[in-house]
Length: 337
Picture (tube, helix red, strand yellow):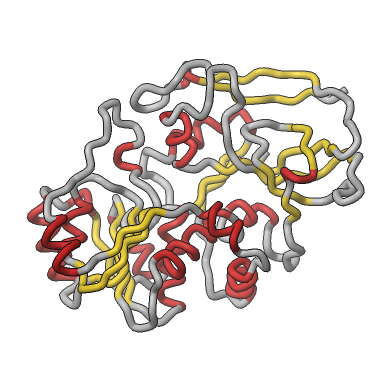
């Protein structure tokens, strides 16, 4: 009998999550039935959307914390997933779990120097969210100008690199000077700025006008808040906004109030298009996996870097989750089990 460790929700989050809101339990897993497999977690992905799921009431007290993991099949009653197969699955924050074949995605065979954990990052939902948001939702064209906020985050770092690969100018914002240097010196952003040094929205407007005088064609939005309308005011006619998230409001105890100033000028007169999206929806439509194939090719050719920070140990999963909101890390955050 296999014992599984699970992080579970003990109390609904109010504002910034606290250690008392979650806890670890152990359970005994039953024997496998036909079509099932037992997987052992290799790494857990922690992402901002997990905070949103809880605030939306999609997780009840006592439920296993939601999330994606890369795992190895260690026992199988499903011939499509023999022992030793690497898979990704939304098995949550669990060390072991029993899954059916329809809940598993096989990890492609990577070159020996590419770690399997990339299936949770640049070669998984994170990278594909950047790809679909920029190229499909944002309809990016060669020679255009891209602006991405939270540019040093897991998705933002990929957005900037793809923009450069597609022959575009790329600009971004991040929360520390070191992150800004990384974006420019290591990832090839044309320019970037530390938003924490911008005292108010008028100053942000001046910063954008000075840095991006040609205007913005595609805005990859990760943050939300008052800065949203300032960026929109600096967009070109027929510009597109790919709405990926609004992390600035995720831990707010107040009901989110959308900023509507400048909507008439920015959207009506400039014919701007705003569209929300999720990577999951696009993956479901991408039947032949064309996006993933292109991403794997770029990684193999050394055209994409994949910065990140790994926490070690199942007991540090919640600590890793909290780090999403501290602004201390660059790129993807994983917990290696």
